[in-house]
Image (cartoon, rainbow, N blue to C red; front, side, top):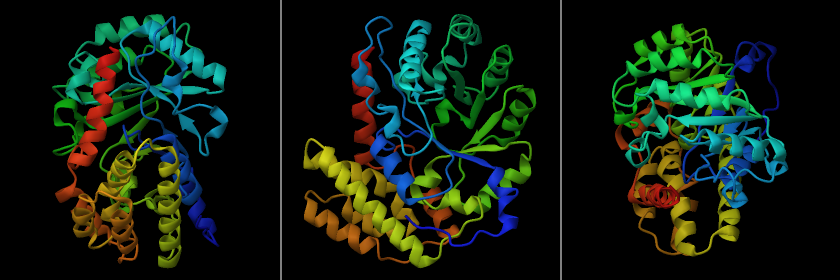
Length: 366
């Protein structure tokens, strides 16, 4: 782990009062990733685990909770997430997590993938505020944990969320995380900051901003635009640059510290995946999934990733990774260029396969 040897007093305010969390990424931010990240990088106050789904309200299969249990294995404050349109399932999930030691959970009303959204799951529920109210009427009087909600501006239209916020405001929700896009946009196109501002003005629930924070300069621009927001969820920006959270908080490691931290992170993550993966192909797929993002941390990372992604064996993968880890670090402008020009909403075929397989499993459960 890298350590900042000195933090000046002026850095403690306002930076240290900012709450930063890591967004959940299906197929990437597993318990192994979250714990390894926490051992090598600073700045995050909490992380959100990818969603739990398909929990039978009367015969819960505890294996579905394996990514967040046991509770005491979390190296950083962790918020489990679930996705559901069944109030009984929600209460069953909350009960199990409460018994295991959790105090807060997150309801995913923002997932944009059509396989789920077309079943009114994720952001697919947003056009139906009356159905959301019926679920919350059942859930809120009996839920065992603090409830937060992650959402978008709508599924089809940005005008959908304001009507839903009118519903949310009727309940003692602890946090509302808003990604300022619609579901049909996925992760492409511009964010609708004016509509986010409108929703922020409507909400009586504390709001967290989530979306397109790709370097600390971008965070500063958004913080100036929304000075009332004190909580920020980082997503792809952290997957590209694991130092982003600490940089936002005014802690900037030098080049040697960064190199040591990223090499140590890679070595530990690779080792832990290799120990847990059922086969080499799956393990290499997981490594390529993180490099799809993290290659943007290096000035010429894309050319290495383009070669790496066709690797079929451990030795050739490690040769590419070790060479990439020695490349010059990208500037903020280079990271922004990588973000704008090379990232897709699910990435390369490797990343698509990870997400596709997970969604296929969910379809079989529902």
